[in-house]
Image (cartoon, rainbow, N blue to C red):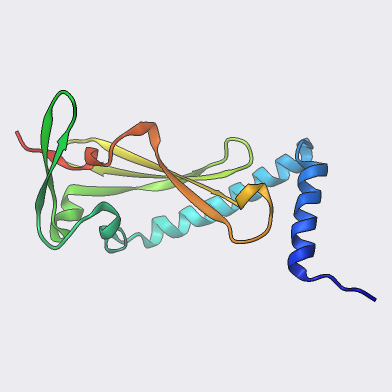
Length: 157
């Protein structure tokens, strides 16, 4: 008797599902429902346990205030980046919500500069690589509407 490894079965099963059911409306609805349930749970956890300390390196927030020069073909803007101690007084996490346009989970996170009122949103697309239910899921982050990260920082006049 020959046995297959779980990884082989998993990959073959995932390809079979994709080949047979990828256009089936009931299957797509089930995928969408699973994405919504998972997304709501992820957002609930993030919204209840958010800590600015976890994102300082992502936003390049350091223990000291510094200035950032953004140069385009038309102008140069100097932006003030807050220090860690001032982060929560300058940049506010407005929360995250889930969105499932078809069947793929998206987590939308919103941040706001409390002084300028400008908002920045990130869309995390959560999926399995190549649409197959095997391996480690991945999340790719995109800035919504091509808004630059610098929207969170204050321009120096």
